[in-house]
Length: 330
Image (cartoon, rainbow, N blue to C red; front, top):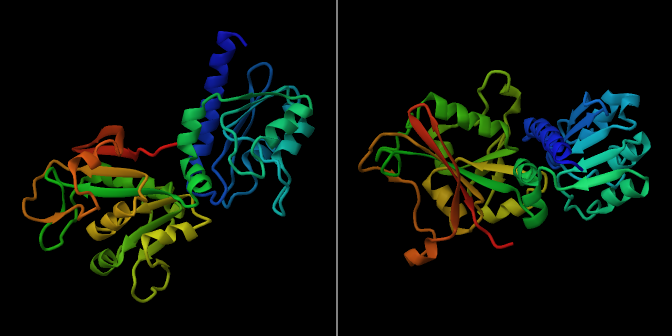
């Protein structure tokens, strides 16, 4: 393919990734896939994202929109079309093969053993040209929760903290409203909308009685499930985890957001279960107060290096967001 053709593939795949990203937090346990169908003249004739609850899949949505215009078109999809038939719908590889597009451009192979490689092979066997790898990194970032669950058997876990310059999360009294300003709080609510579940510890629950909902206009219905890390009694409306290791039981959660206090953050870090840290840092100094973390199992500074990399940083009004990702082998 020409250089111009490659640029077009990247541009259209970016649009497919944006479609899938808009569905993040609503599709678990299925991945939040995006699909774009482009006619030979460059017109977009079908758009789709995995529907709420995981069905229909993005390809089915886009194909229904495109109708007969899918024949001879190019299909851009962020994850390999599924190859297994389920009670909830047909295999997307079969739907695409029947629609007879000229090409299917796939960002990522599906690690699910029911599909891995089989969807691509089925398309090629039906005479469809398949290109794999366009937009791979961006697609992997968008569906990182699903990929983490497939690889590690648990959700991708994001730890969120609001800190002062000197690393405090609250005054000695426990008061912490509000360390950060409005823009940072809006960012947190968007992160909630992109998560399947939010977790806090019992101390935070008792002290703050948090709602943990999404309070952004138009996204109020995206409030995720609530979970409580506690060895105590159950609480109506909350799912209970007795220890951080219980995240391995969350087979229907792709993205878990941990918003608990110091004890909860420390427990997850000590268990090495945190994949991503969001630090919202406010330009204030608290002095004596509650620290962000306790002992996390490190006895030498040398052991702390190389475990985290900074993935992003940006200004949010007067505050600053720092995004860190855990460095793991493989």
